[in-house]
Length: 423
Image (cartoon, rainbow, N blue to C red; front, side, top):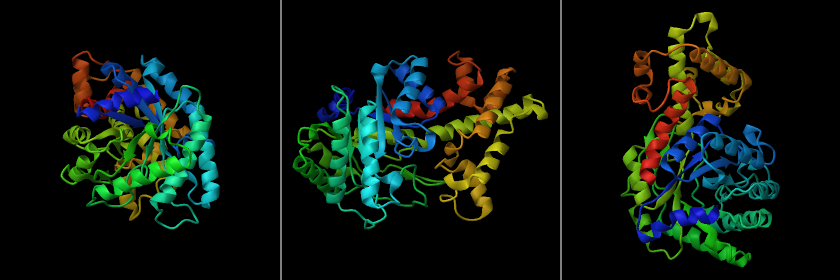
C-alpha cells in the first residue's frame, strides 16, 4: 500500500491539487464513519494510530499494532470497504510516550514499537523523534532528530513483510499531539530555511546510515502551515504566511508533499487552500470525536423528552462523575477555576472527553442511551431542532432514524468537508 499512497499523491508534482485526509482515532463509530465516507467517494481510506493510543504495551486503548489492524479491518469491512483500499498509518512513532525516561531507554522502547507497527503491516510511518527525553536538552538539534529517525527507520525496514515496504514521514517542527494545551493567538508558518535544512539533514543522515535506497519512500515532511486550535479558539489558515514555503516546495526535486497536523476545526475553504498549497496529507482527530460528543448530547436531550426519568441513561452525569474520579487525562490540560474546568471538560476543542468513551461505566451509559432511543420513534420535528443536517438527510431518504446512524452521519459531517477539499 505504500506505493499506492505515493502514486495517489504524485499528481501534486504535476501541479494537480490532490490530497488525502488521515483519520486519527480509535473509536469504532469514527472508523465506521470514515469507511462509509470512503465507500461513498470510492476513495482510499487512511487511518492512523498514535504512539500513545497503540503500542507494544497496549497504549491507552489496550491495543497493540496487530490488534488495531484487526479492529479497523473489522469495522471497515462491515461498512463495505475492502482491505485493498485501506492504508494504516502510525503517527508520532518515536520516544514521545516515554519521554520522561532517559533517551537511551525511551529510544529502546520506540525501536521496539516501530518494529511492531511494521510487522503488523502499517504502510505509512511517521518517524517522530522531535520530542526531548529526560536527559536531553529542551530543544533537540535537527542532526540528533535525524539520527534517531534513521534508527527508527532501520527497525521498521528490518521488520516489515516482503512487498509491504512502508512510506515514511519526517520533520522536526511537529505539533504536540492532540492540539495546543495553552492559548494560541499567533503562529508563524515554518520558514523555508528550517524546512530546507530539515530535509537536507535527514537525507544526509539516512544516506550515511545505509538508508539511501529507502529515501525515495520518504513521502512527506511535517511542517507548520500556521494552523492550530486551543481549548476555545481556532487559528485559521492564512496562505500568505505559508506562501514562501509553498513556493519552495514547488521547486524541490524531491517527490515529497507536506503533512499538516492539527487541521481540526478549520473552515471549509481553508482545506481547499491547504491542499492547493501542497499540504496534501491533512490530519484530523479531535474534531471527529467532538462531533460524536455533540451527537450524543443531542440524543440525550431528546431522550429526556421521550423516555421516563427512571429509565434514562444519565450519560452526561456519568461522564462528569467519571472524569472527576479519574482526572489524569484532563487535569494537566485544563487549568484555572473549577467552573472553567467544568466547561472545558465537555466543550474544549481539545476534546479530552475522547479518552473516556471506553471506560466501562461511560460505555454502559452510551449503550443505554442508544437502546432507549432505538425503542421509540424520534419525531422528525424534534430531530430538526437537535440534528438539523441529519434531519434533512432522513427526509431525503439518505439515512434512517436509527440512533447509531445519526451519530455516524454527524461524524461524517466533518469528513465530508475534508473529502471535498481532497478531491
